[in-house]
Length: 122
Image (cartoon, rainbow, N blue to C red; front, side, top):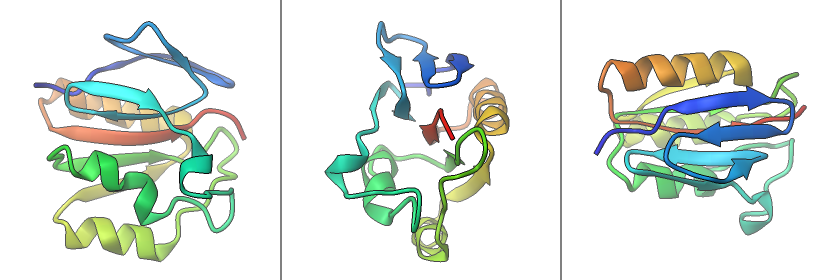
């Protein structure tokens, strides 16, 4: 299974290939996607993306993970999350969301088993 391409991004809205949903924040992985509900893990802009936020995507057998920090990069990514991913042998890329989507889609086009977690507002 390949990772689905992110087909569109605008403030507060993301569309993923193969899904009829419009997401505000989303998680994507080879073969699927779903809404990223921060309430599941108690995530807030600071301290930001926790290992618990990315664990589900990691468990899908990804080689790389792209984290979109938001349009204005308001969402933090603490060193503990990056370290968790690196210990799993995953190439992690943390970017502003528009750049993150471009990077993610480029990795998809290269056939990389890539996952992502994306914040589409601030």
